Length: 358
View: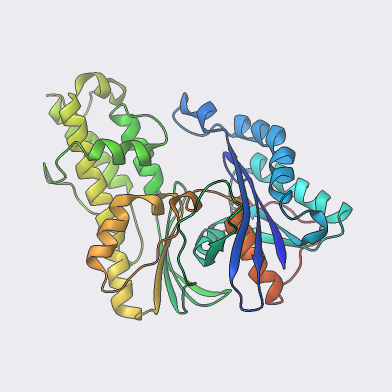
């Protein structure tokens, strides 16, 4: 089966075609992404109205390019992200997918964006005709699978017993880890998106230059990053010889380059340690057969380094290009829905679900 996946939950307009065979191996045939990140960078974050307009301009060319390698006659079903995400952005993708499902007479599958991130790890091969190379795991995760999902909007730990059978162990109670990276980057004058900016700057600093606190939660697998952000702010103000009344917007011009590097390095270490601590605890409690990481922050070299050093098991990381939002993860989850008999969505009535949770 060939599945077309469409993703438009935030600032990437994406589409991909994935093939799933009789042995449930997923192979990537196309993966097209049009990002509007450059438009949002000047504002320090995603502007929903700009993102939605960009999706309208890009979605048909992106889908056309994604389908070209196999042709519409080969497509067996369409999968589309219907939540969670920005309402206007989701609407563009869902309405386009609904229309295509009707006029092309294809089954339609509604996809949970967060769950789809996990399924990027189930893509184990790629067509040699793809214009770029992908470093993919050679085998799919084996159930039960412990999943750490970390991105700009999500920080979650989940245990998958099988496809579509999982328990959410814990999640953030305030900010997601990716959002914390964005806020700290802005605080010290680094460009958006914050994850790569902080990661690059951290290589110049001392990750043990000073201490920062880790949140202590009532539930062992829940996360909180608001206190860590505040601690970074207070330390940066103190570095400038100022108190808490010193405006954060003045920090970039008051900190030295070396101070910014140390802040980036220490913050990154502590933020990553926070999620790795909980992943290790869950691994020890539940003894999963596999561990996967998913979401934009899963591309972090520091996260991969800490996990590889601390978890007593090998982790088959997917290509960083499949960690950020993409159509391949949507197509792969759609492929498993199609082959395992999951319900088909009604193309005449499928609605967006901006606040959809796992």
